[in-house]
Image (cartoon, rainbow, N blue to C red):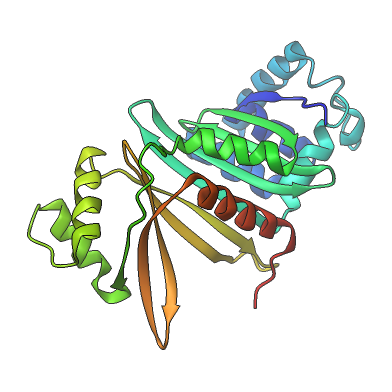
Length: 262
């Protein structure tokens, strides 16, 4: 598919969503960007945003009640799919360059890719599954230089205690795999990132269908995921080879299109 990419500020995206009558999402994005603003302030922000969108060639004409004709081809459809999608893949990453959030929604042509950089710059485009997998991999930059396979279980009720002990560099008694995880944790400055699969029901309540935490070390990547063993919930902490990483991504992203609340 031909990729048409749109780069927008939070104010521009909020304005465009408001024009397309997606007021709830527009208000949420604007509030996160600039805080609480009165009507006069919003009008000034939107005036600036509209001029900027005209300059970029995204906004073609502004005629109230006709949002489909206001924007360049495909843009209003992109916003509509973004605002009305019930299923969402969300990935969070933080590093020395700031905070980044990647989301993917299903669209009529595949997936909507939405990247937010430091709550300011929004990149929107459509892509197919294989392209999206590449983007998510680049987002996390997992390392696969060490092909050892390690894993260990932790009872859910003990997980926070384990992480706290690792943070304090206390002795942990979970075996060699846990010791390596602790070493990688400190090498990575304790930065655990994550991705999740979320479904929003009609009442607006988000349901987390799956959450995977990730520790991206210098030689390997660890996945931290809840699994039910027998009756009790456990957290399984394990390394992923490149193929396992791709399988995990493909399975999770495919559910963006199909997942329902059970």
